[in-house]
Image (cartoon, rainbow, N blue to C red; front, side, top):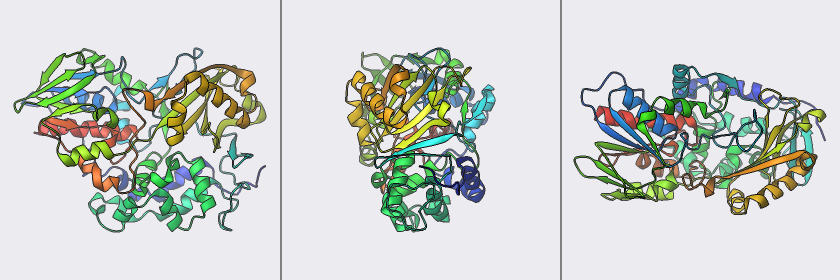
Length: 492
């Protein structure tokens, strides 16, 4: 069922957000006191031997900055590849097909990412927002609507909400209501910002006048609202709109992993793969790191950039301060299970459909990936993206069972999937031993309670990663945290 097109398209919406909040953008999303203030300039006169745990974006950025400044770096990575949770999936699919099983997009205001991308000559491509109709499968009802188009949503909405598309509700209840004080991190422990951190996204929406139906509609159509009752409204405002603030997001030609691969290629001699670190010791005059096979690595300083849940499994000596240990143990992460189905062709295009969908079904949010050279007729991928508690339940099932379940659910959204299905792949991030979940996801109160402790160094042991950045769960946050940690060592 369709309604008249009386709302704004996603592209126009994002451009309006950028124009409307541009004055706040640099303050809200890149505050100097809680993220990187700048890159290292000049060469060191006191070269350090630095160990970096993890070859994700934060570890690679830290190592690259230190190496350029004249320090000796060794990156210890448990996987057999760089990138961490920036991971472009190519196998087991047909040649020319790939999908992002990790980070989805870069933002136009991601200054650190842009610097690296320009430095390495990587090619940017616009993020592929849907241009054809989007499918919604909500409350048992299947709806097709053009991007930015309202519909007769299957929820009880207030008169001012009826007929609006989900993004218009986001603008009404979030973008237009963010307090200007959010732009100054020095005010985060004062009103009204501290209340925003202590308030869940769900309660924040309710306080702005959103009906219960509107909250459900936002929850089921916006990735940042997957668990609205357990999400800090401040964290949401800072991180989730940082991706779009001030311009259009983009991807990299050939896959988002081109950035970590390029960084790693310039430090081949500095990276050791297959090293699972279990113990980090500050000896007072240096650091010693042990892996699970008993090998030891020594240096002057170490930067720990592995994900939060993995950090919990590392033994630190001397023990971490109580506040830091509490922050590492208590900062939540969101679980993600992503199921990718290869089909012989993008059959949905024949019905003027985009392949994108928002659902309250077990398949979650649906994302299409077309063949890089033959988008209209070549094989394609359609993904079911599930976040939150349901992702954990799905990820615990055998992979074959997950694929069968997602195929069955996807058939309700895009009939024809079963007929055209070729191959399936499941990425359960909670089952990945080197991630143990998706990105950090602060609950109410967690930004003020934990962020500074997550960032703080412990003697010669330094910490980075998206979970230590105000821009959590983003590639920019990871890069900035790595540069920050590198600068701490360089300037010490």
